[in-house]
Image 1: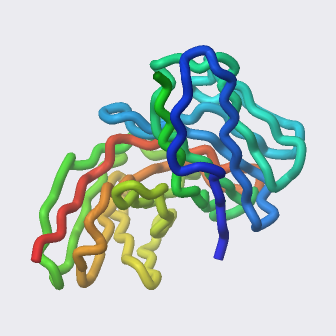
Image 2: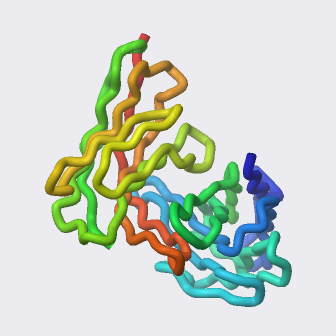
Image 3: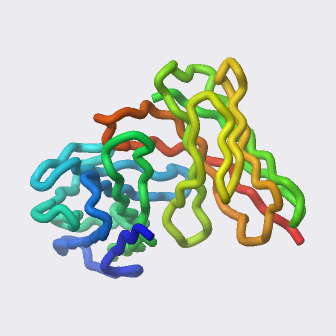
Length: 113
Length: 113
């Protein structure tokens, strides 16, 4: 089975802190994604990467950056956390090609105080 | 990507078939219909996808109308564990596709004993 592992299920940070959310997948997938999910707004794409060191902005990249130094790992970085970044963060990966099914991690619930 | 319209919520009796509709009247010829679901406090899970033929797998069946403007996801024997938010998504497929998904609000399916 494909496994997408997010480093933390719950995280509490202070305003202004630098926050790293880590995601690792074990299926050699080319593509990795970061979403955030908020009540009433659904899942929104923050950034995605289709190869090592490559990244593309999603729909809401402001306030976030990403890093993909290795194929299996995709990090989401909040340079200076703010309270409006309190959310559920979901990582996903997929293989390029027909079907292109996304596999999701369990999510990280981040609270910024 | 084509927009989809789903009812916000539905109920189903345990053991009965759950039929979840989705309208996608602006779907393009190269766009597939995908279904994902999200059980509470988990990441979304792929269910099934199709282009124009009906599809079936171990989880569900997908019925796409001949004009492709709507589809129905069928869970043949719903259980309490099928209680979740179900998302219908349409997007292009192909060897160069990186798999970006746009999630709507979905249908909250409540399976009742």
